[in-house]
Image: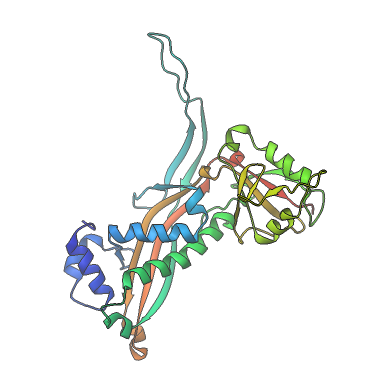
Amino acid sequence: MKTSTTYNRAFWNLVRGSSDQHNNLREGSDYQTGAYFLPNESISRFLAALSKENLFRRIATTINATTKGGSIIASDACTAADWIPENNPIPDAEQLFKQYRVQEHKLAGITLLQNDFLQDTAFDVESYLTNEFARSFGKKEEWAFINGDGVNQPYGIMHPTNGAEIGLTASAVDSISFDEIIKLFFNLESQYRNRAVWVMNDETALALRKLKDSSGNYLWRSTDDTILGKPVLISNFMPSPASGNKAIAFGDFSYYWIVERQNLSIRPIKEKYYVTDQIAYIGFEFLDGCLIRPEAIKLLQMSA
């Protein structure tokens, strides 16, 4: 198992340049990429680092679905509950929401290390590689979960047919009013407001920071970074407030599912960078993402 001490030791020896570890790594080899899966202990560290880099890793729902071979079907049902008299049937799920065919989208990246570092036993190569791949993969994931078009990447919340619903169109091309924020808030169904957050980029946040009501009170509560009691989160992959752009997302992001098809695997490459005394590491992830209830997130779109 990838939890074993033998696998863990063999994996990191391979990373440091040892070439005689393959027999001890068979259980964790990935036939698709020629890489080896990160040991389970290291995976938890990678995911912790990934959540710091990718906003969606903190507010979306992550589901492990490691069935190999193409797509799988995911569906979301509304759980029914009621008080049941003695001997009466338990109610069925009231409504089946949209079904999604979950794909295996490959995310890959490469980083280089000098052999001098690898030969230094004090150098923490595990922390270095997990943090480097978390940083690069996290940003690519976050961009796709917002702007992805579903072609070799997940569908993002901005997608016109598989993303969030338009909750409100602003009256201006490049500015947002106090009243429009309030309208967007109440355009989200109450069942989704309980865990709702605002997501926007820095430019939009700066504009909202300046909004005041008729009594001169700021809309944005600076003591806890909330608007109308809901947290404001920043992603600079969100569009700016310009003609036709969807500048603000408000809703319950737990209905965006990140579907892990395969956790991080790493393949060391020594030969290509031999003359520069470096080793390359190629990292791979296979995953998908989709908003399973479009009505759970509402977008504010600027006037065209």
